[in-house]
Length: 401
Image 1 (cartoon, one colour):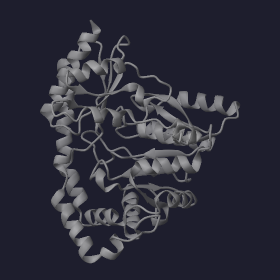
Image 2 (cartoon, rainbow, N blue to C red):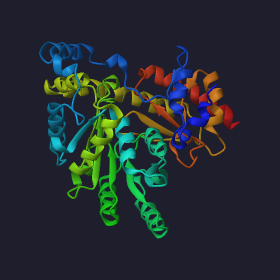
Image 3 (cartoon, rainbow, N blue to C red):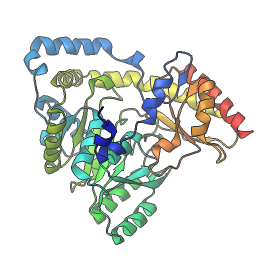
Image 4 (cartoon, helix red, strand yellow):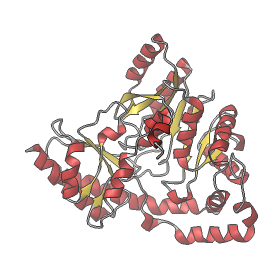
């Protein structure tokens, strides 16, 4: 018998499962309300519009759609994505764009080309779980910088940078989700974005700016991306269609300096040769026909109703001492319970009450967040969100007694 465990690489031994993916295996029963995913509402998918695009692609472009494609992406889609970015103030041409199999692959490739064992990625505290997984898989060290309601704390970041530099540590990049952050739902202020860019230029450390939710704003004024403020090539910008169109298409993209994009494409060649030309062309047709703007106008008010229902339920049912964020957009809000509550230990009781969530510790590389919870409001109808919060509040109340 082969001892497979003994044959795994040191890197493979470090890979851990996603708490979210493991949780989703437990909550497929129809009577459990899951507030733990990060999914768009499949009931709102633009099936007929996508079917129309699929038929067009197969009728007019089948040889390209069903064959291999260039590693960087379908040229027409790259040009369109660059054009969309320019409309948002980002300096880009098609040569600055590489299409990936979702933003998760982008994170994996960024880690692959930038992180040697022990290299440091500075992240928000808390931060996106998928990014922490990707960076750790390549033996990078994630160091978490605390946030406040305006985003990452610049004072703490600069102090940590000075300390790390004095210790001769290799710092490769700063990773942020500045708009409707996963997991907190918070949005980094304009001033904080400017300050972060100044830090990037001062210390010569790039920023990886992840923008999966940019179109999902329900209130307040649009905030410019950090990339749109960048004139020196310090920002690597990421986006995806997974949250605003369909995760099943598996289309994400990276915009960055040409030298960086070329290296990312070389790494991608060894990973999958190319992202599916079929799904790229579907996405291209969908956007070219103006269906994306049309679809966003459909989902925004629906997701706002879902968010509002969850916020109203929190205000009505949550016990004293529990606090939560009030996101202006995106898919998530963050709940802080009193320090006496361990949300990981509480999950079993919550599942018994037929409601699921993700514990806060999943979003910290240093094990913090024991009393915190991430909640998703985009997947369920408003009335289900309300009932889920009612059940969860009851569990929290029992654990406070």
